[in-house]
Image 1 (tube, rainbow, N blue to C red):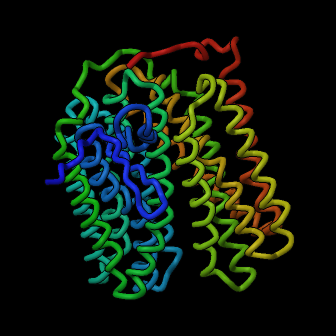
Image 2: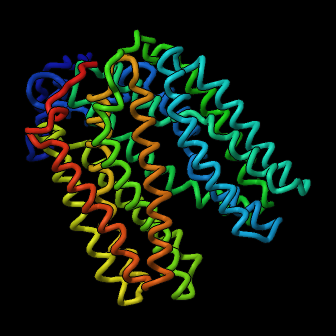
Length: 434
């Protein structure tokens, strides 16, 4: 009776005039096959609980790119006034810049779940109040008051980065990968958010964008906050002068915000001048796509040298690449401009990743959410200033000259970053371990 060959046996047989050898040795044994090591992102999400809190955080972060566009379309569509819509959203931005650091301070003091959920509930009520005020033709001041209430929205991206910093505090390489993923997620959300908002408001009804964004925010924060196993513990607050340590970094964030704000306004103006204003969103989305791709690639690479020395190089690359839109804007070709912004955007993510890494390192113990929210506040302030400056140059000079504003803002960030890490700077070598 034939015997089943052993798993480790070598079977020899003859078929016609051919000798056949069959090896039953398992392919995983010995050195015959070496398993491929998992990539950096796969190792990152192999940690327990990381996938769950990331899904919740992404759901909560997507509305950040939806609320402003939804509010503008909703208000302008019913009140027939872009001036009123712009003023209401600007008020919300200013209120966020004032309230967000205090919300982050409460998160650091009492924990993410205890603060994020009620803060999000207040912000959601503000969004719904704005919707009702618009729908029922409330006076203008009511719109401002309702939208200002949304300023309590917590910095979900900062809370996610705080979780990674807690989980990977002993693995700097993995933390670098996590920061790169978070920056790519930011770019993706701010790329898809406006597109989704515009589609909902135009394809369904004007209030649809605000309704969906509010639902996503609430759902995402609840899912994120429910993952208590990865939540960083509340620590005793340091009395160290956190804002002094971050002062120069916040100035870099302010200048980089000027790059983003000016680029957006000038690109919309150029598309409008060419008679293709609706294409401006696609052109700006390509810039965000370039940043997203560069961020993921940057995270897969091993960082060379300390972040202090990498930041000036990253900002220098951003400054150099921003000359492309300035040079090609004069051609009047939107496809060429889109390609230039796609390439220019590739320096954005590495610069922001390195900046946020330094913010994490220089923020005093127990104040990480506050430190990262201050950086976001700096960006918001820069975006507002860059938008105003870009619009002024377009109106009083030309659209082509408008692309000089983001270039000047990037050059300013480069000068600040070089001064920031001058060995004679007394804050250059300060460290605050986590």
